[in-house]
Image 1 (tube, helix red, strand yellow):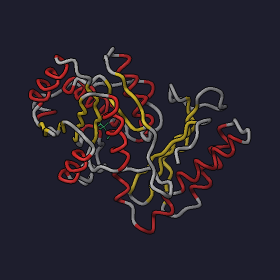
Image 2: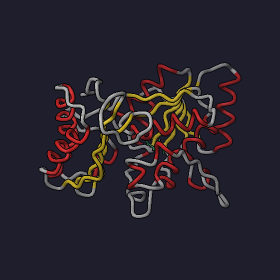
Image 3: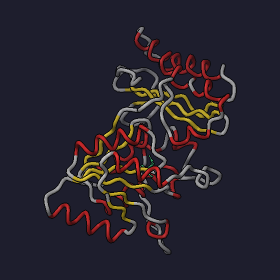
Length: 285
Ligand code: PAF
């Protein structure tokens, strides 16, 4: 397994792979791996000849006052886990390599980023699409793999790749959960012991919503109300949003007709948790 820090070296390595006709699978990450990341790597291992991952905590997707400085990092453990998972290359650039002096270009996907997390984190998706576009130009993958836990991020990156004619297949993999149902996230490490039960209110409210839907409820207002009420009964919780949106446009909808997603963002103590469920699908638990 190679560890590459320079943009130029990464580009040259990817060029050599492409010249040999090898298919490049890419998993972009911010490190501090859990089983969700490992499942993306497993998929990457299956879908390409060469599996490249990136570990980079991207400053432009964090807003003022967010957790950029304290975002958990553990490169040595990540390196070992990557090696075990059959990763061929870790690309882990520095900030000055990715955003050198005089940097001034950003990619902004409009419609799908304006709702949900885009409302409470106004610069977040601009940072995500900018870094993904840069990473795609550096790693030159044929296929890029993202988790469905960050559903709006997946839709946004897919939108960007389609709109900018990037010749990359962007695929989403199911959310990986702890045995109690909590969606895996590097930020779960911020949760205090006494907050854990409250953190489970996200998946439990999703189950409640699924049950209402399975019993025929299609009015989003009713489902949202029940889910919100359930979450609010738990201590330490502060709802950012509970919404039901069209799964392609991310716009709020009043009735569930086509593909619709229930999306939640809840602060539990200082930890901001997100989760989602696409109606009609089996729940990945
Ligand atoms: O999902 C993440 O970990 C990040 O948003 C990503 C896609 C690696 C971009 O920094």
